[in-house]
Image 1 (tube, helix red, strand yellow):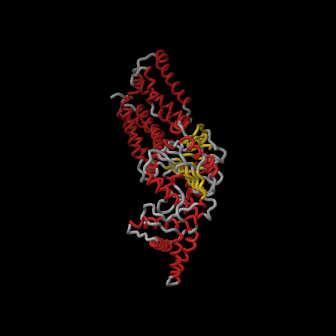
Image 2 (cartoon, rainbow, N blue to C red; image 1 turned 45 degrees about the horizontal axis):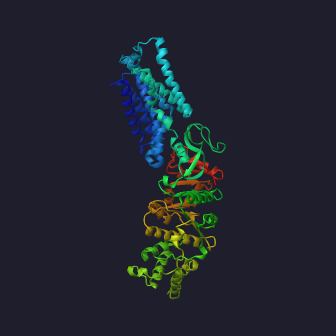
Image 3 (cartoon, rainbow, N blue to C red; image 1 turned 60 degrees about the vertical axis):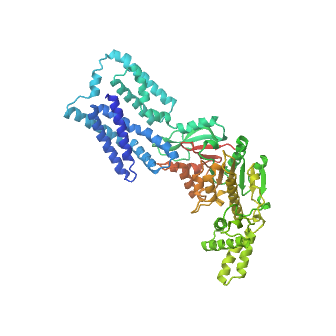
Length: 606
């Protein structure tokens, strides 16, 4: 077996063992790094014996250590799609090994020890030195042939660093790699004309050429792919020694290699068909550009793909946009919808759903919740609907007015003051809901889902009514979705503004989160807009392929959104997200979708 093949096999073995040692998640890292250093020393000495050359062992071991760079980059790409704790730990540990000067000091110390042991104790000659002596070429022929052609290879290596700019640290390692590769190939007796493969053989080259290509290829793809032009990319997240830093006057960065926002250029466009799902999350403080972006998406999705949007609009902000699209504007104060309609559910199932909504909206206690379920069951019985008799489920359902009359009857016939107070405690809430808004359903869901529509709620009496109406609409949409059957593609979007008011975090998944998990096969996408991402159901954020965050300043929401966008925490990665979100200018946002290897900062074009 020749020297080059032996070096390759030893490198693979060394990398495998180092990665295994670094993957000890449950072991203390200080123990891990000492074990890795000990293994590197021992493996270099063993390589000296197997290769019969301490010099070749030094080149091979140094190459193995530097090869961890490409592995680290590949792990970073994997972490974008697979949020695995063990992978994140390996990435951090690799970074500590390759960025630690002690690692290289140990490599050279082990080389010195092995060289003197090999030459003085074993009294053996070094294969590399022997082959250099036996080259049998005159100085003049070396100058004309070997050195000249090697210089051409070195020139090509330098040109690659110019074509694909790298940090100084990376350039030095790359050029050293080319030198070592040339040395091994010359010692193997290759012709100088074949030394061009030395550049391609060096394992740092794929890292140098692939560095950042995930985002940049996306940027190039976005230029030709059909989609909604969101805006211009102004920077992207990279790891290295900070250079060309975006917003450097405000962002604090260490001088050593770290995560930072590097100035970048390109166009970011959104195509729902190129994502893993259709859902979009837009977060940010008031006045930062959330609604403006949502309006742009509503118009462009309809213009480019004829995808209509149904907007649940608590402040009538989207009425003008829907009118521009010749859509349907529904004044929520002039319609009626009955939350107690069964829609092919059992009475018991609907009772639990309605009681859950009322409890969450009005913040009722568990005892009040139990009393409310009992009252709802009686309201259904008043209309002849019995849970154990499916034939009765087709009868006309009760309304909140029916429920109010049941409460009044219970108060009248109460046997004690305590019993009466339990019913009287619920009466104000049900009286509020027994208005004309919650009577028989008059809205046509087939109409509002067939073209751009908005349910304008500004004229409704308070946030409680808006929240219950919104959830009822969504439940009706879910029923319509199931009845319509599976869709071959994206048929419409549901836009929910002020989502934190109706999709609050709780122990059970919210209705919106459940719809998002299964709506893709029914051709429905969601655009969720919120000022308080911490308050909304975490299932909504997890199931949004495209996440866009404008400026956030409230500490808890800022911290939560930074963790969501960062994906995993490594060194200063979380802090750089938090600072960027805090200092983000108006109409700028961090964008992360299912195709980007790392997030980008985009100047939104409204």
